[in-house]
Length: 365
Image 1 (tube, rainbow, N blue to C red):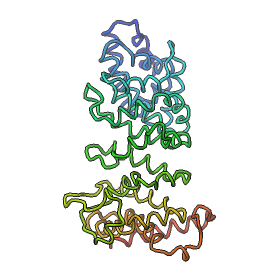
Image 2 (image 1 turned 90 degrees about the vertical axis):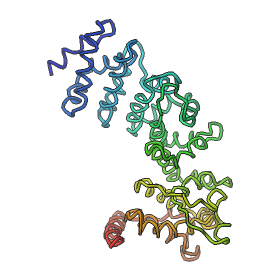
Image 3 (image 1 turned 120 degrees about the horizontal axis):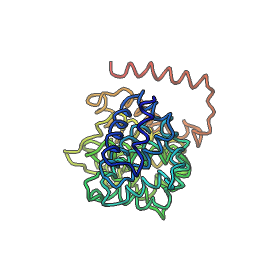
Image 4 (image 1 turned 135 degrees about the horizontal axis):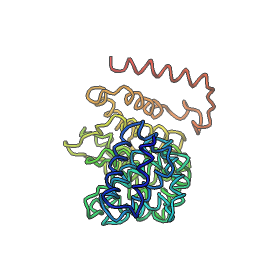
């Protein structure tokens, strides 16, 4: 510990460049292990020095400092400690604001690294409201940076903006801002639910949709006349199968007559998330009727065949069957307007979980 503590004196802004470089290289290597991270996180002066060096004039120093922050914020406790301590840095260092400015700068070489830091911080639900307050004025610019694939001129991909937006929609205010017409955030993010080049960008976008679907307040927005959000949910679940003319007429226009080359989402976790979105949208009678009228059952019928033969993920099969079971029932059989109004005891919930677990084991036998 004392050896680590001695490095702090060499990590001051006015210190010789070579000494800063050697000290920070050692610190960065320490952040690669649990023991090293614990040692650094216990030293407030060390953390404040690292934050200060992220803005160093030397590019290598700044890079190593930001990379150290990525590792230090990877777990919740470290993220909370860094976020709270950064507020004590002088001159003023609002870490979320610093990250947003770097990400928004088209010429920033560390935009990707800063987006990973911000992704780690926003993943902590208790920090999300404060970070959202800081980021709100910059959300339109961040959405623009995300939506324009060649935004950063230094070849930063900015894929980690997707999990940042996803993390912010953990909280009600984040979902509200995402769905506000004046920002048009959701419209800019939706196309990336099928973005093949990056599972991080794709997964973050699907996570945003899932968080919004879990809030019944936004179900009418999701199932709007444009069908854009529903298409974003269904498209990754669609394959090249041909439908009858009658079935095709039900589908949103973007999902009709898909080419033979159309493939489904390859990641089972993301497929399951999309199916969970549909399940949440089955909560109310109006939404169930919209889903039936849009051919959701027909798409899931073909998807289930594919999952059983090709995808072969039992949890995805169960998630699919849960939706199909509801859509196949007549409303008279269901007998209630809103599933969320049904109270389930803890004992019943545990039994449902156990029954599902037992059933899942039989699905691929």
